[in-house]
Image 1 (cartoon, protein in one colour):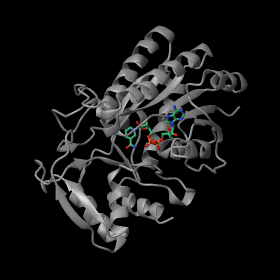
Image 2: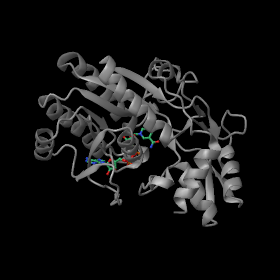
Image 3: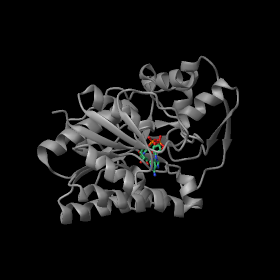
Image 4: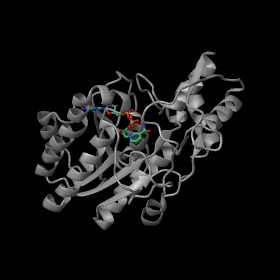
Length: 322
Ligand SMILES: NC(=O)c1ccc[n+]([C@@H]2O[C@H](COP(=O)([O-])OP(=O)(O)OC[C@H]3O[C@@H](n4cnc5c(N)ncnc54)[C@H](O)[C@@H]3O)[C@@H](O)[C@H]2O)c1
């Protein structure tokens, strides 16, 4: 019998790309998503149930109707800045609701859980590349949300025989325009879509700080193509089913690009120059965030194959121009 995976937030950017791949690999997919961006989801690779992932009545009916083999939890509020000004909403959606969901899931005997965590759990790195043993020092409520859920998962694993994998993503990027899958955040805060839109609309693109301790002075981040992220979820699920062992993995390419390198690549791809203006640094931005990904490579045999910069920008531009 086909295994069934419940994907919370599967109508979002990373969740939809992952759900697509899982379905391609022969799994049955059920999505719960409340479409917070009023985004369109007209795909046939999953059954979409529109609703809140902590709605107990809804969950009861889902767990009674379907035999769920694992849950992947992508549903969250993601804007770091808003988490600072409105932490209550973030703690409610990202922490309280997750605990409520876990309780219902465990009550129904579902024991496999894959969680979308973030490199934000590390805060300002004291060492780069960042491995999983790096100290935790989240600087935003968003990062704290992710870390709290990880602690909850540790305790639940011990007490309730839950098996989980927490994937600490670095910067998700790129799209799969051929399958109509990409980011639809409102407002968009991610640098690549913002840069591509600025070039296309001949608007100014703001660089926040060019005096960082990096070769060209701009911040360096580890951009991972969303299709490589999706593959890591597939491998994580198969590992959980086979090995029945909880794990925490960093999920990045191990290579960083600066803001100026992104701009050069985007200008080349768009065939047009960007209008750049340099502003002061933003609070909370750090020089460099790069993953040490040895652990996920050795345990899950994960290898990124889409994450070169050209590929990321090319697919993101195609998605923007759709
Ligand atoms: N995008 C990144 O670079 C990045 C980096 C690190 C971690 N993450 C994490 O990965 C996950 C997915 O990120 P994304 O970029 O795909 O985000 P996204 O906003 O595109 O997708 C999240 C989805 O969750 C849904 N959702 C939110 N709250 C819900 C609720 N209470 N009930 C039902 N549905 C709800 C939204 O409607 C949305 O479709 C998030 O948990 C995010 O924190 C993302």
